[in-house]
Length: 249
Image (tube, rainbow, N blue to C red; front, top):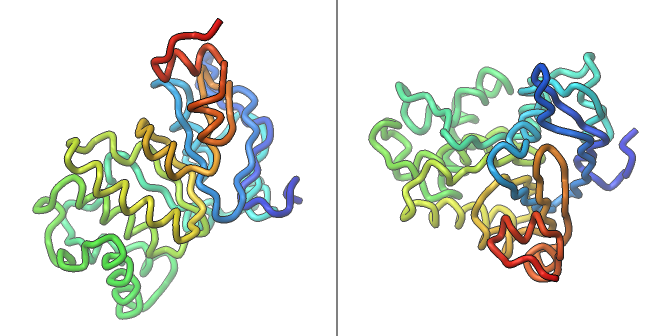
């Protein structure tokens, strides 16, 4: 059973190695229902690999991941089913360029959740409205901006009725003027109580929206706590260097 029953996600001693490269080393963390966990850290610290392990896009080398009390690393657990419940939003959108916006949001509903087309479209429109993209439902993906693509990707993930959403640097591929529109959607999701794990370099989002912040470096969690602790109280020298602060004596 889940080590802590009120957690949606509980990770225990997670490790991941690629040949001789230890990318994750003994990661343990809990995420409660409705919580927004933000993960900070330099490039190469293991943040994206951690997210990919959570929805089984990568197979961990060791450790346990509990989702609603079920160890999802058990080979008997259906990985595709887990991915419908743990939605992922990628930095590169991962949209089908040859389909319009609406089709991108209905494809997995129809083929994975086996919804009828009419039901899938109704749900897609609901979520496209939520992210301000319903008016672009029949636009080709190639015709919309990067910020709009990412909002479509969020609507697509929401259309699967996930219990939690994983965001892997969702604004890193965007022009600066488009970052705000995506972060606004994510802020609203957090306010509405969506359970979220967000890998990002957007410090203002981490400060204002996160319930809990983790700082990772070299495959380890080296500091964690409330945004106030991370940004104002911590004396961890590696974190202070990352934040561009002078190390306190």
